[in-house]
Image (cartoon, rainbow, N blue to C red):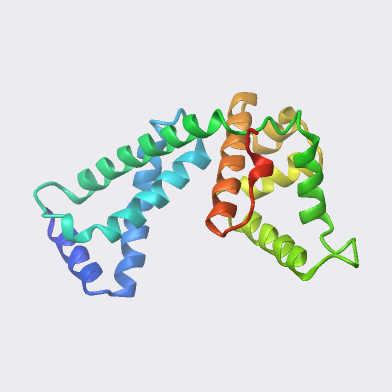
Length: 200
C-alpha cells in the first residue's frame, strides 16, 4: 500500500474531517469512471454506485488490512454495490407499476407535490406527508427527483426527457425506472405509504 493511502486511512480512522474530504476527492472520480465502464455509460447509476462505495468503505475501514492497494479494495466494493443495485432493480421491476398506465400515481404525485395545500381542509398529517414527499424528491440521488417531476408534473414523454438528459431513449427509461425505485425506497424508509408505486 502506498504511503499516501496509508496516511489517508490513518486520518479516516482517527475521524479527521479533512481526511474524509480528501478521501472523497481522491477516489470519487476514479470510482465513477470505474462504474461507468460497467454500466454502459449510465451517469446516474455510476454516480450512485461511487457514492455508495465510498460510504460503505468508510463504515468498513477496520476490515481493510492494506494487503492490496486501496483503490483495488474500493473497486471490489464498487463491484458488489453494482451487483446489489442490479439485483434490487430486477426484484423491484416486477413490483413497480407502469406509471404511464396508472393514473392513480400521477394524481397522487400532483396532489402531494404540485399543490399540497390546495385543499384547505386537509389534515395536518396530509400536509406533513406532502412536505416529506417534496423533501424526498429533492434528496433523491442524481437527477431522479427532477426526472420524476418532468414526467408526472410536466407530463413530458420519455423521448422529451431523453432530450433534456441528452441521452438515449433506453437510458432515459432506465433512469426513470430507477427514480421510481429510489422514491419508493426513500418513502418506505421514512414510514410513508408507498403502495401507490407498487404492483398491486
